[in-house]
Image (tube, rainbow, N blue to C red):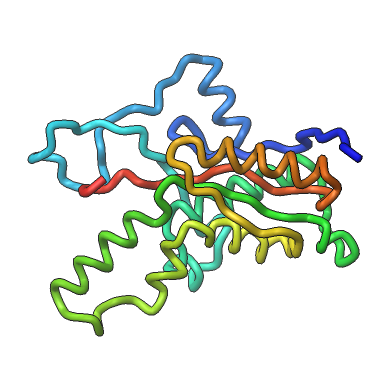
Length: 198
C-alpha cells in the first residue's frame, strides 16, 4: 500500500539567514548570501568570495562540551532539524520513536575537520589527532546527532551524492513513508565545505 506523504515542517540554516523565517524573508527581498570569505586568508586564491553561513552560534543548539565533537556541517544539521521540528509540532514519544527515522545527506561531510586534523598530524604526529576526528567528520554523523537529539529510533541513514545529497535524502525519506516503513522522517542536507583545500 502506498501512503500519501506530506511535509509538515521546514528548517533552514543558510548564507542568507539562520532559521526558516529569516532565510525566507531574505530570499523574497532578493538578498544575496555571497560575500568575501572570512574563515581563512584568501590572499593567494583566485576566488575570494563564497556563501558562508554568518552569525551562527552553535551554543544555541548544542552544549559547549559537545560543540568540539561536531564539524560545522553537523551543527548546521542539528539547528535546521530543530527549526523543522518546532515548525512541524511533531513530538517523538517513546511509542512513536521506532517509527521516526532520520536521513541527512552531505556531499563531503566534515571537510574543515579533515583539513584541521591532517594539519595537526603533519605538525605533531599521530598523538596530535583529536579523538573526536572521525565522529566529527563522517557524513552519517549529521543524521546520527539529529536522531540522538530528537530520540528518533527508526531508520538512520545518509546519502553522499555531491550537490544532490539533500534532494536524494528527501526523496528516499518520501519512499520510506510511502512504503509504510516509517511514519515520519527528519530529512534534508547539510554542508560546510568553504575551506582552503576545497
